[in-house]
Structure formats: C-alpha cells, structure tokens
Image (cartoon, rainbow, N blue to C red; front, side, top):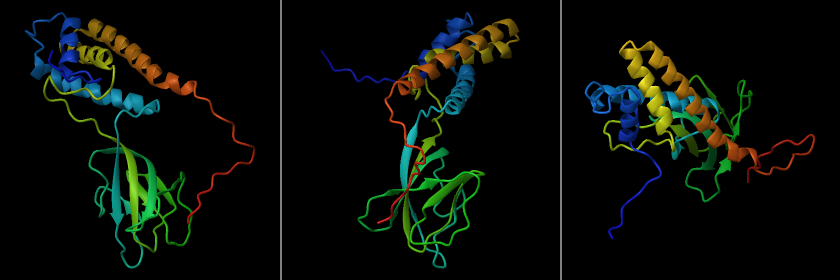
Length: 233
C-alpha cells in the first residue's frame, strides 16, 4: 500500500464544509469558498487572539538578530523601522537571550522588565528588555550583541481549501464562528446568535484542552525571599 502523508493539522476546507452544513447550504449554492474564506480568516485571527489572552501560543518561532555598534553602543530599541528590525510576522515577544557576537559563549537569558527599564549605564551586555508600544526597549551595550528572540507569529492567511489550519483541533470552533458571521451577513440574527454561542463554548473547550495539562505538572515551591539572578561569565 502507498504511504500517505498525514498531519495533525486540519485543512481550511474541513471548516468550510462544516460551516456550510451549519447554515444549511451544503451544496455551496450561496456560501462558496470565495464567499466564506474572508469570514474564516476573520474567525481564525479572532481565535488566535482569544487563545493568546488565555496564555496559549499557537505558533512560536525563533530568530537571531545581530545588533551593530553605533557610537560605541548597541541600539536602544528594536522596532518595525529599526536596523535590524523586528520580524514582520511578530505578534509579541516571549523570551530573549544574548551572546557577544562571534563568541562561543552560551546564550544568556535576559530579564524581562515591566513598568520601565532602570536608569543604568550600558555595560558589555544588554541584561534587560521591555516590550512597550510595539517595541523592544533595551539599555544598550558597549559590545556587539547577538539577540536570540523567541516570539509568537502571525498565523498565515488561509487562501486555498487545502491550506493547513495551524491551530490543532480548532475546526469546530472556527466553523461555528464563521457560520455566525455568514448568518449575520444574511440577516439571520437568531442563527448568528446561536452559532456565536456555540463558537464561544467550542473556544472555551479548546482553551481548556491546552491549559489542563499545565495544571497537573509538579512544581516545587520556591523558598521565601527567593530572587532570580542572571550570572554573566
């Protein structure tokens, strides 16, 4: 028998077919793919936002950025217009590490700061970072630094029915949300409200599916007065 390639991700067509069934148009007479695809993409982006608000990241990537020295100090910010610039598909940064560019040192984790960076003089390492106003703010460093950035990516837009849906087990939630948008566009407000309620429940079930394994991981309580320290070698 031939070996068939498989994937854990569903296809856009699966959600589209379920959407048509929910709005009683299985033949696609009214709701064909070109009509439903923009609605599906809207539901797709909305589901990613809802998962992110619950602490669930669905698509994480990593990139190394070499920061140049300008007037003896590395750049103070990384943004969409800086050099180097932030990845164009970045939603939000998760973690940063640093290494002196060209060295064989291990990447050292940087400390995330909230509420504003402290007023410190630049040293040979960046040490800290802050995410504010869609920019990564840095103290700067007196040596050339390579930053390793791990971040959540924007989900790629769905164009064809064969495109993979990059959120596992999400076809039901996406179909209910897409059906709600389609029914609202046709003025079927009762059906739209019913589908929106079903989408809400399916999304909550999906969030619980992602979050439940985290609740049963054994963790040792840190001692009173514990403070996290980063050691630079």
